[in-house]
Amino acid sequence: MKALILSGGTGSRLRPLTYTGAKQLIPVANKPILYYAIEAIHDAGIDEIGIIVGETKAEVKQAVGDGSLFGVKITYIEQDAPRGLAHAVKISQDFIGDDDFLMFLGDNMVRDGVTAFANQFRAHRPNALILLSKVTDPQRFGVAELEDGRVVRLIEKPKVPPSDLALVGVYLFDSKIFEAVNAIEPSWRNELEITDAIQYLVDHGRIVESHVIDGWWKDTGKPEDVLEANRMMLEYIVPHVEATLDADSAVFGRACIASDVTIRNSIIRGPVVIGAGAHIENSYIGPFTSISDGVKIIDSEVENSILLQDTRIERIPTRIDSSLIGKNVQITHADQKPKALRFVLGDNSQAQVY
Image 1: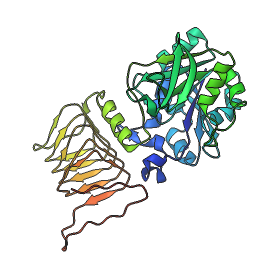
Image 2: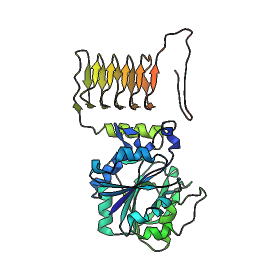
Image 3: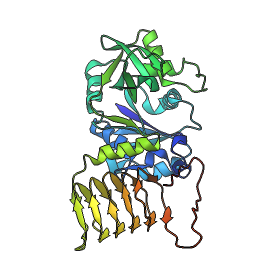
Image 4: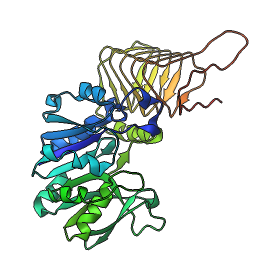
């Protein structure tokens, strides 16, 4: 069995962060989202992975390398433009060959991994197995209609959903899927849709089964989803504080803090992750915050946020909350008169002032 991770796409819903980086490399609990997918696949007993890459291929290749960091072998497969999930399968046929394969959307996170999912496929040997999760708002998702556990119909964002079972974005296929992706036509979006390919299998008498997960999953396509995934992952961190605190500082709750972090006259309240070389001074770091390497926070308060590498926050009088802040950002307080707000913001930025 092999695996295919989709790591192309433009990440338009996460702009401006994704103007300068791949959405799959945004950190959750200080680890790129893509790493969670690779680790889940490895844990399921799969060690040959193809990664579909697009315009951010150089960054993805630099972050993942040949896969040896994870105990897997990586092959990169270039997609010239986002042409749909089924198109990604189609261009991967040479890599997959006649093997079964697991397909994983690289910006999805599944808390409990995909080992049980892969084991069900190995035991039952259907032509396709799709991962589903019960949701409260199925009209926002692709939804599966089942009969006796077998999939009979897939509907994309139905106005009247036939079930509350949403497609998670993880699939297992045998080689019959290549017949389907080569037979279907592009959708109204001019993309080859994986839901159309799976429906083709159903309509042609192939066996399509489902696996419903109990734990949470998250499509990290929007800033609020990334922050929620961060909160969820921080709930499971193992406390490990290597940094030396001064006498006026304290850490409460679960925290992972690297050894060369400087903490002076500050309160850290977990769950929190603080990366190497960070500097926290005269500040408060509240729960569900991930601070990447080299970040400096001085005379400020931050909680429920993600701060990427080498960002500096200094003398901000109001607590920063529910924020996703990119690399090398500077948020500082100025004393000059007259008082004013000064911004340099890229496309699709969001700023709220209270």
